Length: 296
Image (cartoon, rainbow, N blue to C red; front, side, top):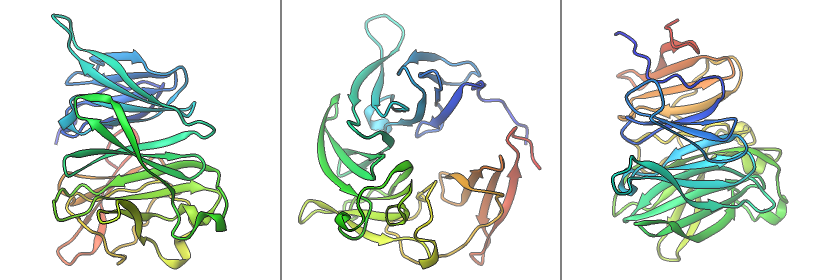
């Protein structure tokens, strides 16, 4: 299969993210700018979102138009929406800024449940905050729904950690009978906060509860760099179906394909690995790509 260059992000790119249909790519740079690429290697839009580096850029669900959230190295989070006014070309407008206060906002993720948009944010003190959009037509109207930390036991037993990063994955299955849930793991100096946990919303008492802690007993204190929820999996189980080894160093990021059949991983060795399960359910390495995109 012939390879086609989609975009030239340049040396200043710090992060990037595809929209939900995989047709638009947003890239954040160390100078605080954000670029959006469509079907051309050059950006169709570019604007200055922050004064410091962009550490993460995430698209909102398509039901809410073309909009992105940008997490900045200064600890703030901004929401931007592409709008067309009168006869002018579409432009990106700032809709909302979230301040981290004494803590930095590390990451953000969006999820839909029963027609309501939720935004999960993580902070450098191990805090998790969940906001709910009050008006689907106004991206500046959010309400804090919950505020807790990523522990199974009361936080007073462990104190507050110092977190450098966090990974979030919202359950992509949409069902009236299924509760809203997401997975989250931290990279911190406290093993009690690090382990990946599944949080589920309890409708009866309108609260978020830890459903399960993932990982083998000897691994539960390890720092978590990446979490990914397969689109064909609903409520998770605690069964460990595979242990994939092959990267030389830490694994930095995980992504599933749209069918949940192929898992992509990348890490400190600069390699991208594609994993698939055979008919017997045994996972194996399907392909390896180097950082330039050529097959190894």
